[in-house]
Image (cartoon, rainbow, N blue to C red; front, side, top):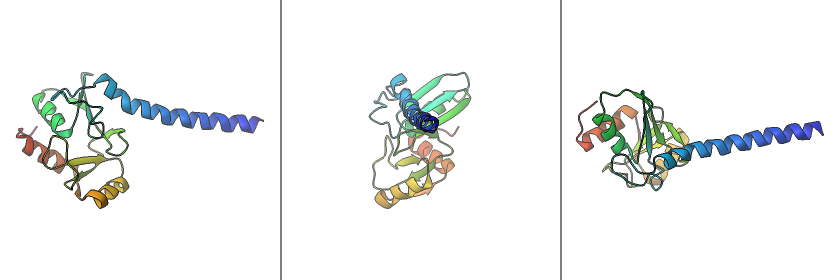
Length: 155
């Protein structure tokens, strides 16, 4: 009987943990429904959305990397605490600098001519490349490419 309770408690904790991650990943959408830069619906673009947290605690939700670059470069004097991007497949927010980025391919990008997609794992990025093309690209190159396309001065 005690073993069954223990197993139940462990399974319940795992379930609640997974549910909590899903709720957290989506809560930024409810709090920042429209893109702060272009007013697009961040829920509709949940797979490309980003969340910027400034050192002063302010949070800014945007629909895409393009809008994140515009936001960051319009606020050069503000220090960024974190820059999160949605994993393209799961829509869970991950650190943009640590994401595996895929640029190019047949899948149309959001607010950009050359698409850039973020993934939490290389396995997911490789699967995307097999389906749609593109190539794994370092974060610094992705950022530079989007800045160039947006005609925004480097930060």
